[in-house]
Image 1 (cartoon, rainbow, N blue to C red):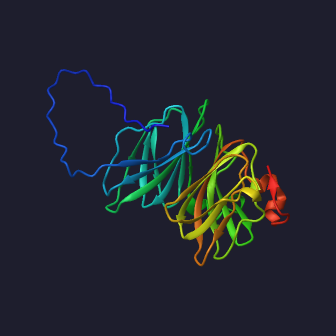
Image 2: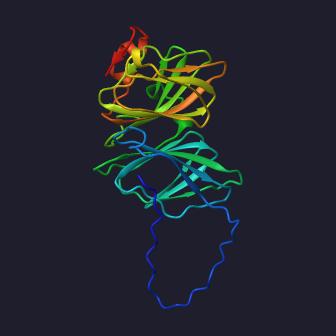
Length: 266
């Protein structure tokens, strides 16, 4: 995936226009690519971050061939698309369909940061804005597990080609149980608060990827890999984004919700 800034079409009139100065220290939106799908051993998913200084506004942006999800990590932002604009508050998410051009604007003096996940797509679906202040109070959007809560911010009820996403909030000293893997989904976990650990492995014999994680870290999960998370003395929060078949493991396999068994595969 490449985020691009296409030129606007010149108006074509003959009126002389004044020049403009864009000073070297002018605040501008910066996009940081965190990974492309091929380097992360994934088929579909890519990921990056937007850094928006106070009062900044981006040029026109797009991700050709992809559908997108934007996650409001820090601060606030306004996303302008054809036909309207969306005001993103803390932990809001916004789905942008295939071919969407958009602009980002930070209305505040403090800097803001958004996370972007993208997956290849073939079909156009509606824009969808999920507001965390609302969804975090709706029981139909929450999955309560032992020691953790899952917030379904972009679920299978929302049309898309490949993406499903949400947030998981761990209480201190918890772990994912039972460990699970997917035959038809790949994922990325982006850690947004706290400290913990994570494993990614094909089988217990190959459990060689064991890493400490903290705010700003991300871990990619290719298909067929188990991927348990462990919180430590502080609560741990992360974005999870799925690309592939559209379901969430706990809705498909009830043993995941009850925390029974030693492992499961979906």
